[in-house]
Image (cartoon, rainbow, N blue to C red; front, side):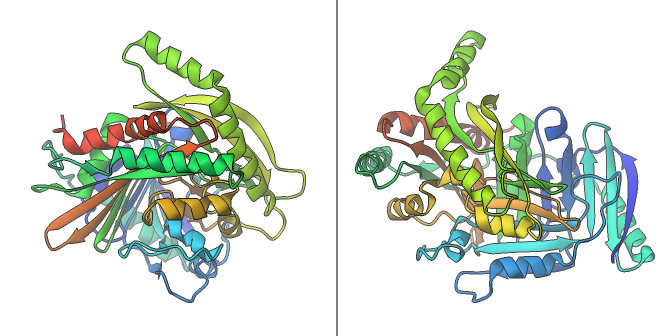
Length: 446
């Protein structure tokens, strides 16, 4: 059994605290934007006591290794935040090749799975405007020491913001080539091979001057933090995400997933904006696309949930973000006896909203039309020592790789392709989705 200590402190902005440690390997910040309970909690962790890296070709079972890293379940702090210490991990899209042997190629820099275990965490409660410092240890004294150490992070001096442009510009793949790929997928759908596939295109660039990956994170959340904004620093790698999409959550034995399918850009005026949201809600195409993924996720959850417990309490809700409106549905279920978060991850990965239906065949189509995705469309997750779990779908995400000349980056945006998809309209959808990230990289900060 591990002992736990929780201390309280006055409010500090999570990104401001992170700025002092952002270049440390395994520094991580999970930041929830938005209003209400969904935007309440954010977390910062550093200096893990154990790490796990499972690269391509590693013979280990990544899910068993993840369970071993997490260790036995512990009792939660009764009045504590949802994440009270445990594992934070990155599952690259190609981890799917460990679930279905598809022969997926890999990006050289990114492992299939990387994770770290943290015995000290700062939890930022935006609702109460307080910070909780949580420490765990094999003795009460060790737990106390770790909680006090985490509390000390709040005293670090923040780095000043970078107001310069972070890149000299992004290059992107040929839009006409993307439209041809969409047309090919539409043809395969009409031929009966699949019902839907999510096809993405890429943008690439390099950081300039003194820019570092954290600067993009700070700028994105300053403009409009998404519900699953995140920053992760690894040796020679960094990930910045402003994802609006939950993958799967476990809380007190209940599972929730909130797939996104259906997009409209924001309008230039309030009237135009409202009209675009109404058009999305009324669109039979987008509702059908969303419902396909709801059915896929219901099937995935049913593999680890109690019979009869999986249901969809909310369909086709319009949620609005900085650059787009999205159509979001909710699927829930209760975990079956003996099943936990790691089994759920293994059954549901990769997210259905960024693969397609049927999932395996859609992944084969994606592999034929795209280069390896790496972190894009994978998941960043936390797994608590008490069995709680939450995870994002890594869209609106930039993946950074360090080399002798500095930092290169890649970002992608995709669209769900169905039978009546228009290739040019899908291309425009990808450009609407990438716009906020591109703007944060290319334009000077305020």
